[in-house]
Image (cartoon, rainbow, N blue to C red):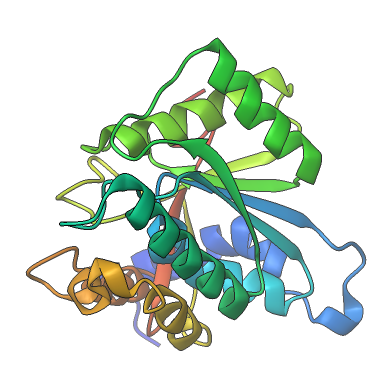
Length: 249
């Protein structure tokens, strides 16, 4: 067999991925020795689903437990609706999406568009995470154009530090290029088998124009899944940066 530079790169990436995050989920439910607990902290309803919905579905299918913490209820996310009306609609959408992913929804109580990082909120997010006793936590990449995404990420990072780094912390990407900036993955998860489940969960967020989330003219998540898949030679993938690797902590 002839190895080109491209073949070597693909094989190297796939091998690297197999030793970290995917190692937690490449286990048959019948042979699992420990059921892991996973928490995902997203800024708004639809962020966790679009950023790592395929991975969440894969973790649950392997027998692990997942809780999703929504920092806000998306109060400012529907034109023509009051904050209360939008929050009600988007909360119901998030609950429906979590049912499809078999994840537990938790709403932290911040206000969409007014994300805060202070001592009070650092403690509150830490307390919410501690209750779940997670082995793995996912959150937004901190270098993002959306303030709420930054807040969700920074609050989670502070929780990781305050808890003495007892859980593995990974960052996901959303709307790469338009929102997530400078993202260089350390880990990949093949979501070929759970891509449609992810899509179904995301399409529960009808108020947010789900087709647009996948379209090139908007967030382009469809192309992101394909591109990350190409990087590890699979049909579709989600990519992550592991704390301590990507940020050199």
